[in-house]
Amino acid sequence: MNHRSLQEEYEQLRSQLDEAYRAPVWQSSRIDHLADALADVERQLVHSHASGEGWRSEPAEPPPFQGAAMNPRHTTASLLPSRSRT
Image: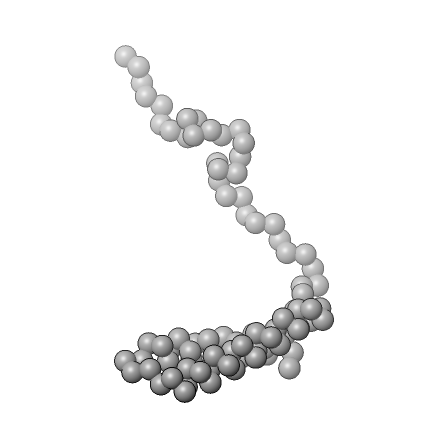
């Protein structure tokens, strides 16, 4: 199974497990089955990453600029509105 298929199966199982936990009465055998299947898919995903299948072929883009907090020229004081002194 390729990496994308594993991710899709993981999301589907995760959704089913969330749904099972939201049920008014928990069906423990269903929850156990889903948790076991989810753990198996997680192991396969780890193996997929270790073999290089899940890695991007190009480097990820750097995070976008986050505003003044990321700019060392700005201080907290420079961000506050100035008070007029009379």
